[in-house]
Length: 373
Image 1 (cartoon, helix red, strand yellow):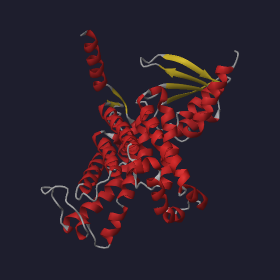
Image 2: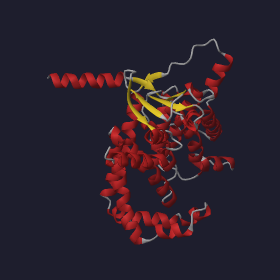
Image 3: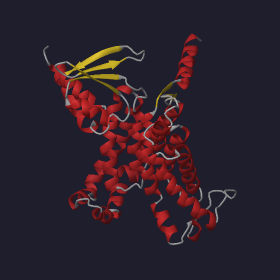
Image 4: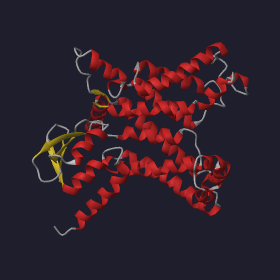
């Protein structure tokens, strides 16, 4: 009974926890162009006077309200403006909410509009809509600082339950996707991927994909192997996200995985949305590392530019080499890294340098383990 109470207390504390969610502001910025890409064909048709009801469509439910031409077109153009405003951060809360509402409304206008990749995008949009992401990296925040200096600075900590929820949703998507492909003989055998590669060959070549790569993707033997690799990779990513020690590896694997399936399979906006969603796995704590660098060291200038998630406190001091100090949850300073280990650890926690720095960090740690010292 005591164990059950302890578990309930821990879950209750987790639900009530708060933290720094500026990473979600970066996600908000990335989702704007993805929404525009998602609605690209709809915009093109609307410009020619064509809306959803002019072509075959199957209402999702009889009671679902269907917008007339006079209403649907203005709603669509406003959604485009709202998506751009969402990325820039102009009237951020209104823009994110309207974008999420319209994308959701448009998806459920017809069963032919629905697809799992679009539902995934909608989940991300709802997440940024319920979080006040305009506090960081937005025109609204800049305007408030510039012209309303008397206002107190925005509260940095926010409830983390939306983050826990969307993390569960994303991990569940990978697990469900891998499981469905595992039990689908056409998918497991590689026939589905080969057919997609053949169907999308011309579009991929037009977009600059090399012919030799498309020839490989259309090869039956390659796809027999690659399909199984893809399924197992999805399981690795999903399970890797669950534990903090394996999370960086899962993110590192997910980046080339989604780039590969976007080139070979063209899964609409899913690859771009999934790559953007990797941001949700950033630890929601600000300034949890103190980076001490020698005066004039290039890392001291690079980190403030690339530290979009506010993870580092940079200190310039009269030290001989780079020192990285982890900050414990209680605010105290704990483990220390120095020299090459400190440099690669820092670069591996910056989004722009992560993918290249992570293998170098792993190699550095492996050499340190093998060192007799």
